[in-house]
Image 1 (cartoon, rainbow, N blue to C red):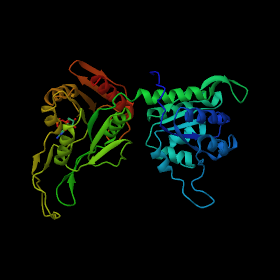
Image 2: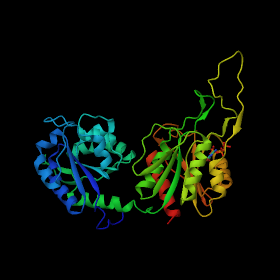
Image 3: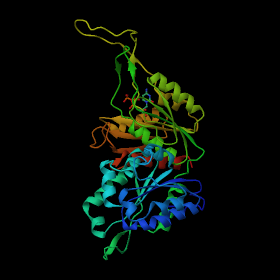
Image 4: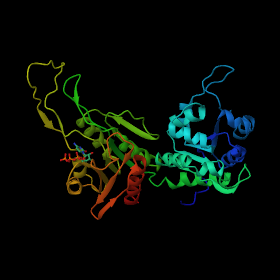
Length: 403
Ligand code: CTP
């Protein structure tokens, strides 16, 4: 972790989530340090947290009302967890109890702090606090690993005297240390400021008639994770997206397209002004030669559909890339490395990300991926990782190449 700069938290919008742990008393100091560092702080508390620290204390320190309930019982006004999640640059849950961590993993939404977690688009950081046995328990360790795999950052608890009187690991990190981790987080990830990348993602849709189309199983998750990782590092990102069910990541500009031809036009135009592109979309190689303008009626016997080739977007951008960076993907089922290397050369990629459908965990729609990064100098095989973590590794490479 590099040293945070003194202004790393200036103007940052931090949403502080407080859960019901004795360490909640430290949240007052934490909020004060964040405010002093120039951050704007809003607080959401679980009902139990109010037993440990009063909303009045937190409201006074942050100069904002504290949110606990889904709505204001006085006037019925709705406390929007979606708006809170969108407002924040970072959602810091400190202290995070074993109970809240487990609910975050499971997607339980029985209080405002948790619904906010589920709708937050910003990075999430948790500072666990609990007794040593609870912390060491396999269940808690699994939950922390699951959150980390999703991209949640963890400020490790420290060793020391616990409220139970026992000694061990479980004490929430000191507020100064949490603030330092937050500062480092904002400093560390901004190395792509001033850069602009195009990311293609998702499946294209090639209409046969007004009702039917040809497409594929791509969910878009990998491309969206890359767009998000690049944006988090300060880059401007144009995400040219085929059909997916995913939300636009924070700070990303999305251009929705349907067909390979539309994707070509949008990606090409954005590439003119960009520093590079990551070609993650599953683009149809063929499209119906004729699109019926009325619904095709069924008849007897077989139906033969004539298909024509689409443009290879990656190859066309590759041919005119100049010094811009181009990253490709190859999804293969056999002779994986030979095919990927051939695409690397043919499409002028700087590096290519190879997925093999033969690898367990590298399936369509899943949250994990197993990839090998290949460039002209060699190959790097990554272990099975979450798609978010794979995106971070790809962003690391882009950062090195664009340094
Ligand atoms: N690609 C693209 N436009 C296309 C087809 C592919 O931009 N019309 C990009 C993909 O986004 C990916 C890379 O090219 O980054 C490899 O795609 P793939 O379909 O695996 O390669 P093809 O060249 O189509 O090879 P194959 O002969 O295996 O179909």
